[in-house]
Image 1 (spheres, chains in turn yellow, purple):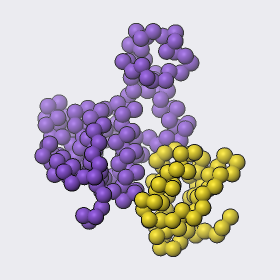
Image 2: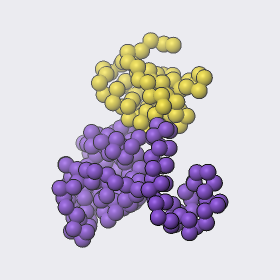
Image 3: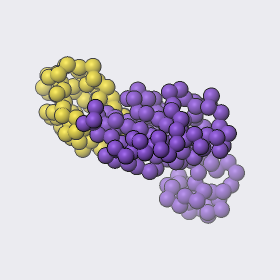
Image 4: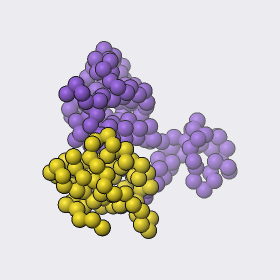
Length: 76
Length: 160
């Protein structure tokens, strides 16, 4: 796993909470910093792609491992 | 901020299930950078009460998944039995909680935090003699023209 500045565990949360919590975490971060998100909502895979596209933050990594989803977002 | 995308929503329904679409879409749009306004009219005003008492009804709702095959051994009339509404509401709330779906209160709070503007339809408030003290703070009261002022410039407008 790559290094990151902040981590958000959104396990057990369903749409739209993982996105809203990620947005909140990013708001408290500096440009260029990275946020690592753990989620269990399968819908979050498409949603974080769409979130990154629309907000200009980059989705550096998206992967699944053992029923959990991991994302790495770099703040624009 | 005229380059910001805008979402306008009209919320007309006051049941637990229908409380979700306006608040989910509004809070998500706000997170994506949209400026959002929701105009609450008729039964939608129930979603603005400080103390929410929203219910879900299986009556007249053949699309509602019923637990334990109840839709098979309860004919349509069964859904009209006294207490069914309370039972189904309790079941729905438990199910949502167990699946990690946010409560309506939580989503509404997130909308408020994200500066989603909420407007209550003045005409409906007067029509039903709804005491304004029962509503959450920070509301604006207005009419159809107030809605169009924002909706006229919105990129997306939804009627829910």
